[in-house]
Amino acid sequence: MTKTWLITGCSTGFGRLLAEAALKRGDQVVATARDPASLSDMAKTFPKTARAAALDVTKPGAAEKAVALAVEAFGKLDILVNNAGFGFIGAIEEATPDEYRPMFETNVFGLIETTRAALPAMRKTGAGGRIVNMSSGAGIKGLQGSGHYNATKFAVEGISDTLRLELAGTGISVSLVEPGPIVSRFRENCLAPFMKHIDWQHSIHRQQYEGQMARLNKPGPAAPFTLPPEAVLAKVIHALESSRPRARYPVTVPSVLFWWLKRLLPVRTMDRVLIRASGGGKR
Image 1: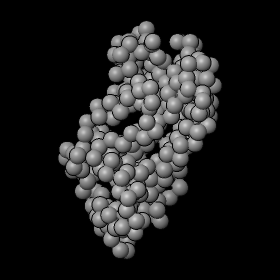
Image 2 (image 1 turned 135 degrees about the vertical axis):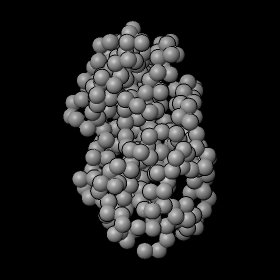
Image 3 (image 1 turned 180 degrees about the vertical axis):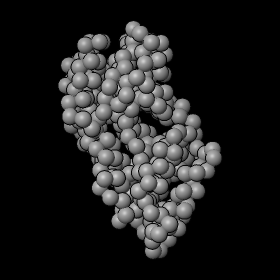
């Protein structure tokens, strides 16, 4: 049966890859971005099954308009993928609200508002539905210099766990996808605001920042076991097709490894592992 998708954050990267994959499967997709012009080629390639919609998830009422477009165009909404989000680098004590609040608005509050807007339409189908929330390996463990981003993804994990309970018996499932190192523009997108907002050369955390900058500037994959975005796509498809979708889909060896270590190691031992992984130490 043809499904109708609503996907946030489709202008580039994984969101666009997922939208195109869904359309090639023969499904109907409302692909959203803050600038819908970035999706015009997709809408032209799939004129009957694709709609490009403006959606800034931080703007009040914007999600409701995108959901209304999906229902008007295709008569229903079956699948929601909350993909919109971005990262930020900076120690907890050094980043300012102007820098980290917009990330919370997008990664957390935008996800909440889009889900709130979509659920009534998904319930009306009477056939259940699927919600996939894009988390991260950062939602599994904290790392130095990524505390604000960790916090947003930890929030996404908690929201998803609660939604899974609240939607029990409705036929609407909720799954988390937790990518580790994936080929994307994530590093490039983090570098510019870091250089603009963090005085790393005079920071008490300079040693830690130097390690992070080396990874951000490194050509090619910055970490071992980096996978192409198709690895994430495979997990999302499983979450949508399986009769018993998993609650969590860690992607890449680091995410799977840290998922297990967090459950098996004492907290202090895990802290030492994470400090070493971050290239940090005492301050």
